[in-house]
Image (tube, rainbow, N blue to C red; front, side, top):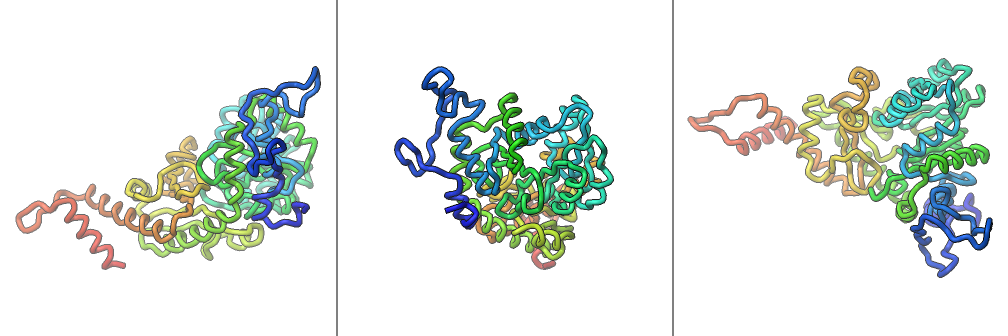
Length: 422
């Protein structure tokens, strides 16, 4: 059956996939090899060297292309390898790019530490207002690269509106769709030219691999990116491609649970007296709720929030988590909690971080597939424990009825007060 007639859950498992031609294995084989034997001089079976192409990587590319709805996809060793290869494919000295201001820190670093030295300039603008994109266009602009939702504030960009600007100026529009994947957001249906994924995240979904992908409808651009990938040696490894092939089969099912769990966690956080604000596209309080409902098929599994106690409250809360893991990635089965100002965006100037809304007290949560009630209980005890720790660090030892009150007794007293206040 044509892929276009299949539902996404079926495409994730069957789309673009073939059985092993040798033994009809239901899982495509792992071709863990560096090179391939030629049948004769100048004659091969389509593969010669794994830096150029590999059957297992090719199988993953076909599976991702089926999900993206494109003729093909190109896989890379990392998400940053995908972005780097794309930009080096379309930009040269004196060219200009427009990027979202709220973007992964590695993308900022790529411009400042690499592309700037090659004579390529980039303007980081607030793409949530399409007028800012229009104003940033110059005769040298060749590509617009947006993240929507943005990392880590989840700020959205109206992809269709920016696509109109890009087409009017004959500029490529690339969308980093890592946070939502083609299951929850379809960039090509919104007239984007390129879709970028860090397959490390939801596509794999098991925290087992590192990888990236690029998909496009433009065959000439596809050929150009493959040439630069071959030249740079940024192709995905066969083993990680094989693992990703298995992980992405459950993508639609996983995302349903990620979205459900994230909404419940976000609602609980928003009601907590110690929380200053919560950012989640599924909440009525989200500033761009209407846009999220218009261009997304789901709110996603990422929740961002800030505690009223600021940076110190965030530090103490993160350190008191027992079930959730402190880690920089996202999109896996396990709930991962990140402190952006000291990890993913640590390289940014502190003043710039503040301007972008990436405060020192900001916490990003990738809600996993654990039971939401267990996650909520963990956040509850961590927030309470952090408030007790803060009180302990700010006060002298307590003497009660002629005796020194021990830490545990102080903590129990504090928690009882917290419960009474609620």
